[in-house]
Amino acid sequence: MPACQEKSPTKITKITAAGRGGAHTYCLFPRPKVYSAQVQSSLPRTAVGVNEYFYALSLREHGAVRCVAAGSSIHLPLAPLTAVLPVGITRVALPPKPLRRGRAGGRVGASRWEVDVHTATPPLLIHKVKYHQQYEAPAAVVATVRRLWQPTFDAMATPLSAICAQYATLEDDVMTPDLIPRGSIIYVNPAYAPEDAKNGAAGIEIHLSKLVETDVRARIALLPNLSHTGWYRRLVGLCHEIHFISGTLVFSNPYTDLEPPRKGYLWQCRSYVLCVWRPSAPPAQPTLNWLDLDAAPTERMHLRLCAKCGRVRFLPRWVAKPESAKLRQGAFVCARLLDAKYGSCEVPEYVLSAVE
Image (cartoon, rainbow, N blue to C red; front, top):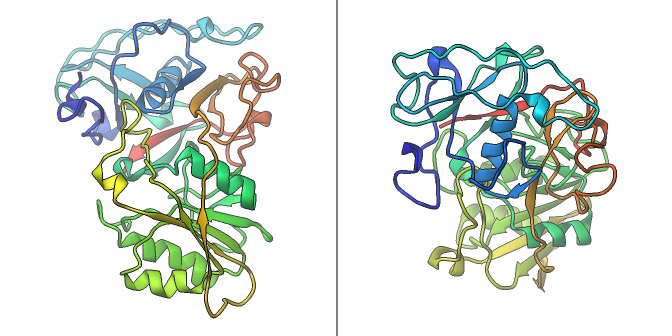
């Protein structure tokens, strides 16, 4: 186990580190032995899948992502990208970089992915994430929300967690004029902590109030049932419908979980609601309902290499048929991605950068 997993066999407990020259870093751990040198196209929805994404980027010719061995600045030799490209796509592999030994940059004693976004042309994009707050809405919630309300915009997401083709990330201000298309049906699983804090639930009020008090479109929010708080009475009290979710929910974090999480006391003692605000004036009293969720589909991460430009892409988590003729490996092109931010060969790949 690398040092970033030292406190837990099931979760990455340390993420942030400074690479050489201030380069971004991400924890690296050994790929499963059953994996070949080729990039795996279907992966568990855990840190194993995120790690495979960095592995795929490390095979790209731009050299923006490199594997640095534990305790030194050795660049590990990796298979050339030509070995994993779709049939018919060829590329001349660059000669391997010489091994450079010296004082380790970044996390001491841990292998890591080190990223220099400006090595690529155009530079790779950066998405800022708070790794330990990236808990995704459970698959059963996503399936139910998409069936009942057909949302078209995810107001707080990442390319991995978004449940709609259009979405806002941490870099976006969801209240920027024209960011959210007119007539959108908005879904949000708000961040619990405020941007300047590492944990807590004070951020729910900050993020939710932007959408409830200043927007007049249809909105659906997945919230903890914290009826004792002031924000709950003020904001949830304005909604048209409150759907109390039957049973318990377990939230996974693909950035830190090394295996699917199991139910614990915290999950079993907390209840959750789906609240709906409609464009009309708020009612005197919200309609209260019990909601049985749809059966949870099996979710995996699906990596694809564009047959036209060779870029590495994640298929959106909500795509029902990732192995369809147009999306399977070898036939996939960026224009078929169903992602408003990355559905073009002109847009470079992205990397993750942790913020405290």
